[in-house]
Structures are given as structure tokens and as C-alpha cells.
Length: 192
Image (cartoon, rainbow, N blue to C red; front, side):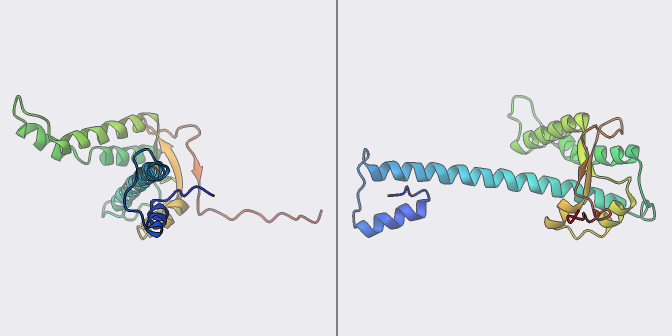
């Protein structure tokens, strides 16, 4: 008999058997325990994946808002130094809120959870910025046009040409991720 992995299948099988009690050392109890742990692991992975995707979405949306602003509206492409400035603005976006928390902080009081989360998020983003921050390639005119017209969906997020830019405004080697909307690949003649 195959192992039931999902909690719903195990519960369904238990209803069919008519037993209401489960012995703590029995086979059904072990099945329930395994299924519960599996459900928790799956939920944790889903949560982590969705959080990662929403962070990627927030990055691209911030850069889209910056390049669509009045001061950059007619600029066709941006240098890596300008991209690094945009990234730094993104990393420092919560500084005002952090400053308010620091001013309100009284001695001998615990730090609020929101402040801890913001500080941890900023620290991780700064570390990534030192190594190479993943962002859309703003030096490519087609990417800029595509980013300006982006509708904010997750599906279109994968079609951007992404690069990694460090704090010095240089592209990090190996940081090129080409999901670009560039020219299509040439057809290969397989008859030869």
C-alpha cells in the first residue's frame, strides 16, 4: 500500500475507517505526524518563495518609478553609475522610518520588531549591494523601454535583462542574466 503523504488523504482514510481515537504509538499516529510535518515544510517553502518574489517585484517597481519620474522621463538609457545611485536610493528607502524608531527608543526598553526587521532587511540589501545587486539592465535601451511599459506582473518579471551592479557602479563578472527581450536567436538548419 503506498504511503499517504498529504494530510487531507490521511484524514479522509481515517473517516472511512470509523475510528475516532488514534493510539499514540500506532501506525495512524505516525502517518499523521509525518503528514503534519510535511505540510509545515511545504508551507514554509511557499512562504519563502513568495517573499523572495515580492522582494524582486519591489526592486523592479522602485526602479520603474524612478525612471518614469519627470526628471528621467526622456532619457533613453542610464549608465551603471546612475543605476548604482538608484539602487542606493532603494536600499535607503526606509531610513526615515528607522530614524523615527531610533528617536522614540527609550533606554532599557526592547527594540520594536518592525525596527529589527527593517534593520535586518537593510543589512542584507547592503551586503548584496557590495557583492552585486541584481537589477534590470538600464544601459540597454530596449530594456528601459520594456521596463517603462511594464505592467507590474510577476510573469513579465522574468523577461527583463538583469545584471548585477556593485556599489562602485561596475557590473559584477558573472552577474549577467539574459532573459532579455533582445533579438531572437537565429534558426539552425538541422538538415545538414
